[in-house]
Image 1 (cartoon, rainbow, N blue to C red):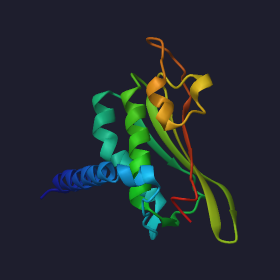
Image 2 (cartoon, one colour):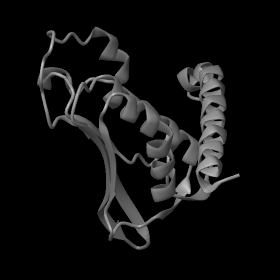
Image 3 (cartoon, rainbow, N blue to C red):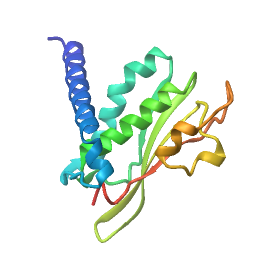
Image 4 (cartoon, helix red, strand yellow):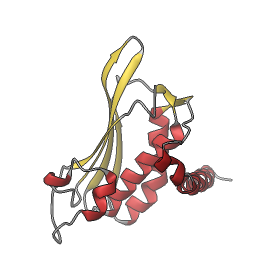
Length: 172
């Protein structure tokens, strides 16, 4: 295979694994609701996990003529203990939604360290886009409330994005 073909094959394999993960997550929904979902705690590279998400959704963004960017702060740590599958799942959902609701411009995944002490880092991961956004009065709502968001047609709240603080329950 040519390097380009290998890259495509790896993307297809990664996409298949991501879809299998999503199916498993759907099957685990009852465990999540019951608060009995077991998280995997393993060493992983957060930068690589976010790169995987961006690579997986690059074609979708390209089809809409959107620029899909990842900015990982150079001084931010990369190695963490946590559940990389769940982190990818959340990031995949947020970036996919950002692409879905952005007509032109870009989607930016931004990761940076907000604090570090005694070998423990706090990370901030945000997804910014030039899409319709979430109304300011609804931004503090839980995802359960998201089905009730109503947006005027062609609303524009550029530079508002999803902000996902790295929760302690998914990493340590």
